[in-house]
Length: 436
Image (cartoon, rainbow, N blue to C red; front, side, top):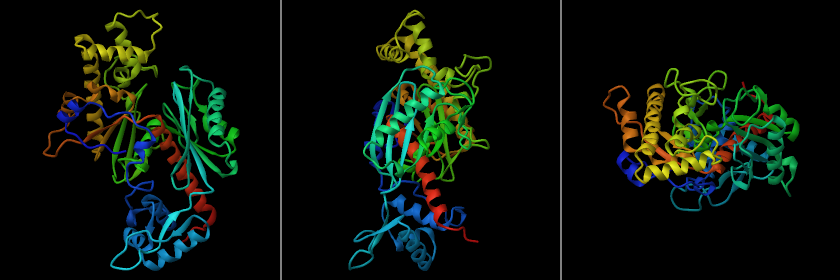
């Protein structure tokens, strides 16, 4: 999933990364999940650290686990034996690192069968979903075109349930342990209530409770930018990073933040709404109802709003916002100065937002993702230079930026990581009593 890091001039010349799906997510190292170990600062039970390490590396010998987690060989032998007895891990012959001559040591790997999860990205044009086993391998994927209108809770549940049913055809339904849902707008991860979303009709929508009643399994609801950050943390460029930021630009502007190798949500689980950070007092009207939000200058609907004026299209024109954007981009590339300045202005506002992110969090990497990263004006050399210039002066090199224009299935896979994490914790909690 990781793309080469380019400096600003190289990136502007190269253009955007091509949109990619699940194939790109498989390009990284084997296994799934974060690759960094927390050591003594890790608050997870030791059994879960061992399990997560094995799943993260794909396969690992006991000696590898001992070295990576800095624990005794006796503890590793005891705890892995318990995990094997309970059907969570299994031994595999002839794998793992071998020191010196002789047969390679026996390795451990996750037992993938028997526990399945589904990840779904809800969108205003097409919902996407993946079915994933306990080892993180994608078994099936599905998508559903949908009308770009606000849906009632019942309509949304109907569509999401239909995707689950399609993925589970011919499979044991009792093996489904959890479903992760990514939705635009703020989402309370603990309660599963969506205070507001451009996809849903009404406020404070109880999406988690309604879906759990439909499916009879645990449902996790998360902001869609957070699930894309999880996709990077579990399957992509963030697996070996402690701190990084994902900024998404599509129908809105979102942000996911990983700090200390974990997704950071804020006190109430609804922080990091970068798109609704104010960049202009009494500025342009945002779809949230407020004025001056970043996405009111950068998101699809903001650019389409100006495109209608630049291209001389009537407000009653039936052309879709996406078609309007494509026409605007073609005009900009063809030399239309007005069209070009619209993208450049959006790029300057994006630079302002990114600069604020760097000042607040000092991340090791910023990943720009989403369909609109096809428009190279948003990350041209001038945009990245302005981002750097807006920060406080220092002697350190600027924060690196990567462009990942993944397809919708990558977002769905991030939602599956949300479900995998919940199923893993439940499987371990069900079988072990907490140690003092």
